[in-house]
Image 1 (cartoon, one colour):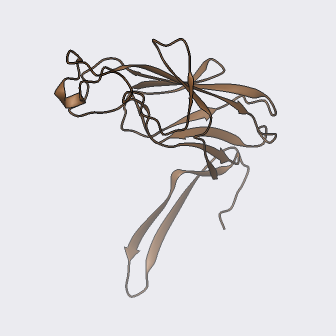
Image 2 (cartoon, one colour):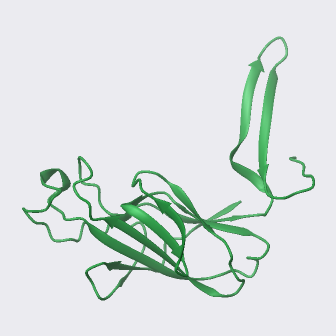
Image 3 (cartoon, helix red, strand yellow):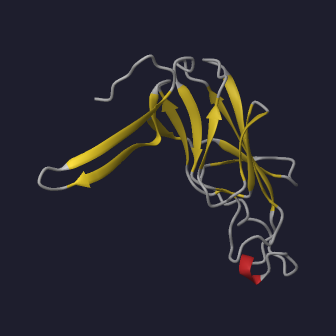
Length: 183
């Protein structure tokens, strides 16, 4: 597996804006909103309003896309989140504090695709403290071989330490393979 930082050249747009701006992730979408004494977040949320925020990125699909598996790993997006690839939803997450993956399937090598992330933090208040909004943590492009060790796919259990140590090792493999070995 290879993880590549995927934080450059994202376009950001508030639902209420007609134009977008170029940002580098991580990015707090709410901090630049105007504060209001009437904001539903109140003093616990710094009097910031919530909102709906859209991030998009053009990405050229690598030439090996027909031989590899690609997915995005989001360390954190605050708001009810939807991730789309060329207009087709590929992932959802409704917890702003949980990391999640977005599989990028059906890629055609050499093409340019549009990745879009919508973070809806309009239903406020929803936190005891200032939560921020948008893609507030790193995003990674995860590249794997078709046959690979599963996420958290290695388990070690110590059965005994003496007189002779005994350890059980379990390795879970994903993908279609007639046989494989772990060396």
